[in-house]
Amino acid sequence: MLRERVSDNVYWFQSEIYAQVTAGVITGPHWAIVIDTLAMPEETLAMREFIEHDLDVPVRYVINTHYHADHTWGNCFFPGSTIIAHSRCRELLIEHGIPALETAKKHNSTLRQVKIVLPHITFRDSNLNIRIGKKNLTIFPAIGHSEDGIAILVEEDRVLFAGDVFMPLPYLVDGDIDQMIATTKQIGKMGLENIVQGHGDIILRGEIEAAVKENLGYLSALKKVVRTAQRRKTPIEYLESIHVADCGKSRVYLGGLAETLHQHNLQSLFKDLEEN
Image 1 (cartoon, rainbow, N blue to C red):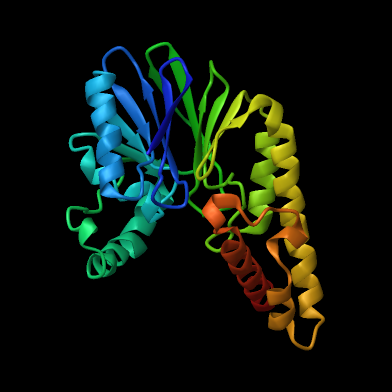
Image 2: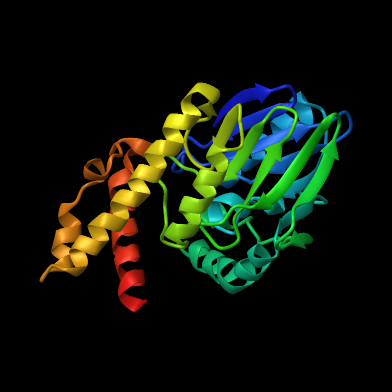
């Protein structure tokens, strides 16, 4: 697990095991807030060890940016903490998270300790605000990657924990491309110092404009490719011939998963447009 201090009392963690998934912690004088958990139990436990022993504070709140397993299945390793999420996150964990974990446990013994802990505090459309120490956090809906996505802005530092709505390669299979475009544009106008992506490295102030432009360009390219595929006699073969680099993204992103995720994007978007 990688770790870095983003600003005073704000830390970032990145998995070295699974898809460069990230998490964060913000500390006050008496307690801490964790943003997301990591995919594997040992990394989430290492994160908790650092917070409780090196930073010497207990975790009072865990915020889940969305319901996907790599961001929520570590909730159980923060016993006594209050979980905060979008109301749809709670619903989706019940609908999909609980059965998915039961299936995963049959194939992966490292998950035997894991159990789903549902959010205790939820919100839907309006913002939620929390003060910790001298920092104000604004939690707001950030949909596109999933329908329950939220982001967390550390107001004083202009640091945004964006969850998976902002990644080195936008991923749409459980989301909506138009909503992601709208959220990405919103993020680009926020005057940020740093973006903590749901996967991948921290984006610094001087890199934000280019990263937003690149993601919007990729999403636009996906739309064009899928519209072209709809006019082809063999659309699936055509989609399979369009590589991630053809749409302006590097295949080395996310530890080499970019090409696979890109194909998932194309197939999912094509299916959505065909159905609608």
